[in-house]
Amino acid sequence: MLDLTDPDLRRSLLTWYHRCGRVLPWRNHPDPYAIWVSEIMLQQTQVKTVIPYYQRWLEAFPTIAALAAAPQQQVLKLWQGLGYYARARNLHRAAQMLVHQGDGSFPQDLQTVLALPGIGRTTAGGILSAAFNQPVAILDGNVKRVLVRLLALDRPISQVLPQLWEASEALLDRHHPRDFNQALMDLGATVCTPKNPACLICPWRSACGAYALNRTAELPMGETSAPLPLKIIGVAVIFNDRGQVLIDRRPEDGLLGGLWEFPGGKLEAGETITDCIRREIAEELALDIEVGQHLITVDHAYSHFRVQLQVYCCQHRSGEPQPLACDEVRWVAIADLDQYPFPKANERIITALRTSGISAH
DNA sequence: CACTCGTGGAA
DNA sequence: TTTCCAAGAGT
Image 1 (cartoon, rainbow, N blue to C red):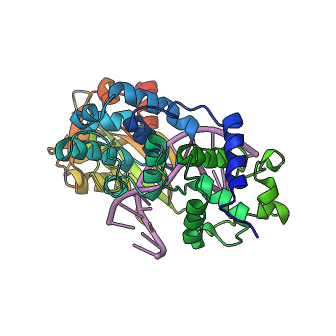
Image 2: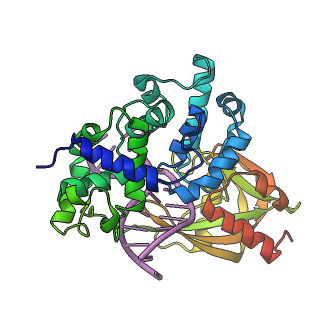
Image 3: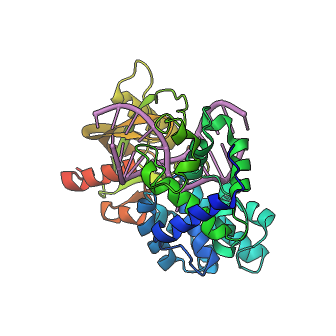
């Protein structure tokens, strides 16, 4: 029977880590704030994607105080393209809490850390072990996969989370929690990968249940998932007679909260795309517009649905734009669109606008 | 507690 | 091309 507290298990992983561990910008960083930023950016996001964002972020906001003092629009602009924008809003809000309700330093107490917005159990363990070498366990995607294989659990991960947390805590090396947690994640990221794991060079090969049963390719078991529904969205690029276009800022909560976009909405059954756009602009902005020529069609996939944006150039006819379904509306010159944080699908609209040379008539 | 929340790398 | 899934958290 596999003993998770076997010192040889910990020793073999740490030895492997010292020889083969990754070199990362935030690893062994002296500032807990930098560790914190990296942990938030790394949620559901690959290391390679995070690195340039991490470096730009620390240049713009080198301290907790600097982040707390920044306007939210600058924070979102630095996060633009990274996704899951609530992470940026929560990080910003947590920095303000630390400055205004504390002494501006990052806390070392687990319960205090867990109380900060955007920090759950795994991120708290990641920060406290990496920044302060505290023995707090983690359970991220890498660790889940490693442990499911090590223990040969043939049930979907969502059904064995309590067991996996127990295992992570039992395994954790109390004398080297920082290196051990980092080693566990590195093992999952570089050896015990989702496909084609490199079992022949794995320090835990002889202890691994999935390897012994020759089932590494089947574990972890896949979760059942429904196909993503598709929404057709009519989108308006509305010009006024000064050549400016109308953009709106989405409500703070929910999808793409706080980011700017071109207005529009969902195509309803039996409706033409032109009617859809005119209706949405009337409902959400109280504007009368003329829908003109097609600009671009953008296909984009979110986590739980796909969208097809059918974008049309439009001309403002009458009415003053009202923020009925958003937080703010603004007329902006095309050259100034760069100053606003936009979601990825809208970036493609901006590119199309500039390359098409379309302007007001 | 099942659902919501982005984007891109990798196969 | 699709499909999976990444250092998960909030509600």
